[in-house]
Image (tube, rainbow, N blue to C red):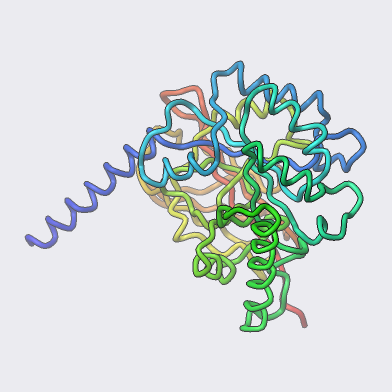
Length: 346
């Protein structure tokens, strides 16, 4: 009996700590690729749109934070000084240097660039040069790892030892190239190419001492999965300032990430089962979408809900998104579950 009471008190105390950390410390990360008018529309914003985004951030009172400092703060359970946003770029395109950086300097906003090193070594058209990357780094821009070749990491038949060694080499070689060229120790961060990952890859990253950055939407807090850190896409169809404003104000739905299914599935209609770590002031009415199409989630307890696509999903990447308006504040709680459907052969 006494043991049960102690256990209940421990759970209650842990819940109170989580609630405090959750309420005081979360932030949202934006991910961009191109800032240009002559690049693929799905991953691009024009310089004019990018300026709109930066002005939106500034005029709504957000601080743009150094990503490393923000992560250290929330992982320690400390509060951020004010509502915060971090800005990141993937791949290492030249227009980051020629178009984005001048605007970011104008607003005095820090940012991070995740670089795939082979494209830089090969001096591919449209990519940053090592001289440009060194210049960015010298002026305080954070440079981080996006593997050597930007190839798919988990679209393999077997996740065996040979696969582990191959993926580990892509990560560690890129890190070594970056640190050699910049003559500096860099954060051990990996942005997954195409936002694709699985649990064995996350385990590898943990062994190597890395944090992992994904491409599904949502905010970051102390209870986040730091091997699959969500980021809000802000380019292409996601560049609209009106919808971006909603995302900037959102808070992460406090889901227990340890209970979520792997991103990779052979099911064409995978079921999401999500468990809230704590009660929050969100409505029981969830707005859920499968690849942007409205779906109805089912509550199976006070803290658990499920969501299943009503049609078969094709091979490839998909997302289940759920939001719920706060009952006490003018913002939405936000959660996204990425899937990579890879049907079994034969």
